[in-house]
Structures are given as C-alpha cells and as structure tokens.
Image (cartoon, rainbow, N blue to C red):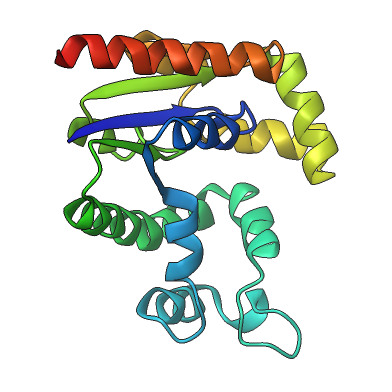
Length: 198
C-alpha cells in the first residue's frame, strides 16, 4: 500500500484533486469528513467542545454544533483556535490511522488541510501539494464562502504558508489552469508512482 499525503492552502482545490485521484482508482481518506463525524451530537469530541466552548455554538433548537459559527469565533481568536485544535487534532489523527488500518487499496490519498502542521506527513510515502495563485485563491473563496477578504486571509494565515508546503512536496499540482489541465497533472503523478513500483 502506498499512502499519498494531499494538502495545500485553504481553497487551493484539494477536494477537486482528491476526486481526480479517486477516478484513477485511489481510496480517499478525507480528514474533514472524519472531523464532521467526530462532532456529531453527544460523541466524546462533541461533549469536549460543549464543555470548553459552551452551548452557544450549537444550532438553535438543535444539539448539533454550528460549524460555521464555531470556525468564525475560533479563527478570530488564537486562544480559542488553540483550544479547538487541542480537542480536534488528536481525534482526527486517530480516526485517520484507524481508516488506514482498515484500508485494502494499493493507493491511498490522505486529504488533509493540516497534514504537515499535525505531523501526518510522517505516515505518508509521498507528499502532494496543490498550488494556486493568491489572488485566484481569494477570489474562489469569496465566491464559495461569502466571507470577507479579512476573514479569509485570517484563516489562511493560521496554516503554514503555501510556499513552505511546496518546498516539502514530492509533487506539486498547479491548479491555476483548467480542470482538464489539473487532471493531466494528477494522471502524470499516478504514472510516475506506477513506474517507481515496477
């Protein structure tokens, strides 16, 4: 089994690239999906979040956590973000390791925004970073999230700079062009990996 770490900066197009790897036969482990499952009502992680942050971050008339509201508050306050990461990161890492143990595919893509920041790159065979120009990244995130430039930049700055991630990468996928162009790059990575194992 070969494990590829897939990361980038927020909004550079990791999810799109992950779907392309899936089309080519890879099994995807999505750190964000694991995080969403972990905060389901009354789970251990959910109880920790409510205990630390209070019920003001649950949805009106529902026990579910309002993820957007919680994210807005955490990214606006470094102390809150640190507390949230302390709860979430160990649980996400454990979830990923359990998924890897169950996996039977020859190629696994670990899609994680904080792959390097959490040290998960140490369990991958190769590191892939999705890159995008800052102006285009900002434009896409504004369109997708409706957040202000200030809020978007604050969230991006909470991650390692994209340039630092690129320096650590075995492969860089340039997502500035068309989807067809990005797909060609993903196919080239898969071809190179197949050549390396034969």
